[in-house]
Length: 150
Image (cartoon, rainbow, N blue to C red; front, side, top):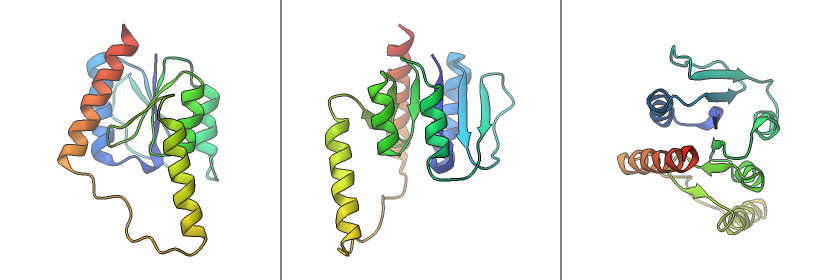
């Protein structure tokens, strides 16, 4: 089992939680990004730098994941792809993507995208990452790691 992080858009506080979990559970963790970023000096965390371009990091993750791995991403289409491959997927706010919820989440994302494309004004983006979000993510990651390791 391995953790894969769609790292370009992953908030720094969430990466810090991932780094601590990787070290604590001795789980190989790979951050996939199209730019350089800091990773801790540990044998359990590596950076896989890919070329810039649309979905290149996502495609690399899909190509490399194995059933039972964990993917951390806020990219819903990527989450949908890996869930189909029997991979655990979670977003940086602690929401787990599963075979039971991914289709409705993807449909809502597509609906909102269609609304924006048709000129409907949508104010704001996601709320700033809160302490509650960080705690929810850490708890969800721990649950998934426990399930995946057993």
